[in-house]
Length: 443
Image (cartoon, rainbow, N blue to C red; front, side):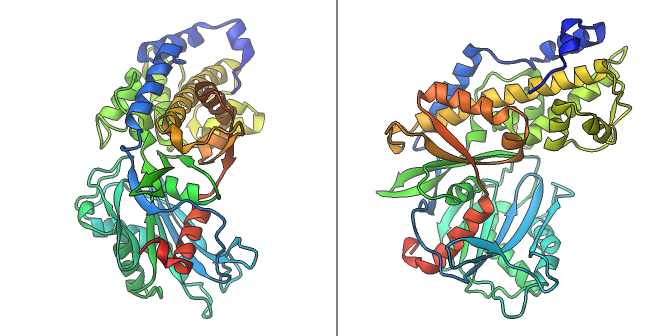
C-alpha cells in the first residue's frame, strides 16, 4: 500500500485538512487496544454454537465421476453468475463449451437491490442468466444443480438434496419481501424450467453459502473465507457427531469500535445494528466509504478535492488509486470527473484509500483469527501451516492487503497460515457432483 512520499515530507494545507476530516470521522489506523477488542469479540460471536450447519461434509480425496455435469448459479451483493461445469477423467473440472464455441457461463450485475416479491428477485436472476444456457449442446445434460447463496439461510434436507430457506432480513442493501417463505433451489429450478432450460424436477440440488463453497474448492481444509461485497465463511465443526462444514458469519460480529462514518453507513443499511464487521471490512463498504469521503471533500468550503464520482467505485479503482501509475490516472479520470493528476490531489486520494484499506485489512485479520481461536480443537497444531482458502478481489487485488491480514492472523494465533486463492464456483460444482456419486453423504 503506497503513499506519495513527497506530500508527507511537505504536507500542504489541503492535505492537512483531509487528514483532519478523516480523524474527525474516526477513519484512522486502529490501535492495538481497539483491534484486541475486535479479536476478543470475534471469538465470542464466532464460537462453535454460533454457526449454522450446512449439512455438507468437508472435502477429502473423493473422486468425481467423469463427464458428470453441474450447473452452478451464484448470487451475492453485486453480481449474479452461472457456469456449467463437467468433471474430467483426472478428477478436475472444466467449463462446458457451448454450441458457439464459447464457454457456457455468464455474469451480470444486479441493476437493483429492491424487489416487490421473492418471485421477482429469483426471476431477475434466472432471466438474466438463462440466455447463456441456450447454447448447451444437445448431447450435454444438466446432472446436478448447485446454488451459491451469499445471504443467510437455514439448510434443510429434502428429496432433491440440500435446500436453503432464506432469512427475511438481507444485508448488502437488498430488500426482498417474502423471501423467507421460499426455498431457494425449488424457486430457481422451476424458473429455469419455465424459461425452457432442461432441468428435470428430480435433478439433485444443493444450496450452500459462499464460504462453504470456497471450503469445498480444496481438500483437507478446516476453514475458508470470502471477502468480496460481503464477508462470509465456512468452518469445520461437529454436528450430531459428524464433521460437517458450518456456515459462519464473520461479517456479523457486533459491538465493535466503529468509526463515525462506518456507524452512519451501518445505520442507513437494511440491517442496522448488525453486520458491523462487514460494514468495517467488506469491499462493498470500502467502496461506499471512499465515495462518501470524496463527496465530503468536494462539498466542504473550500473544496479539498473538486471531484465528482461518475459511477459506483470498484475494487479495481481502489487498486488504481494505490498504484499511482500514470496509466491508472487516466482510468481514474473516467470515473472521478475533474480529478487532477498533480501530486497534491493524487496524494490526498492515495492517503484516503491507504487508510481505508489498511484499516479494513487489520480488522479483517482480527476477525479471521477470532474465527479460529473460537474453536481451537478443530485446528490441529502440528507445527505446519494450515491451508486457508480465500476468495475475493479485495483480499487478493488490493496491494498489501492479504500480507497485512496474514501478519495479523499469525501474530494472534502464534502459528503459520497458508492463505491460498480459491474459487467457490469450483467448490460448488464439486459438491453437486459428489452428491450425485455419494448420496449416502446426505440421506
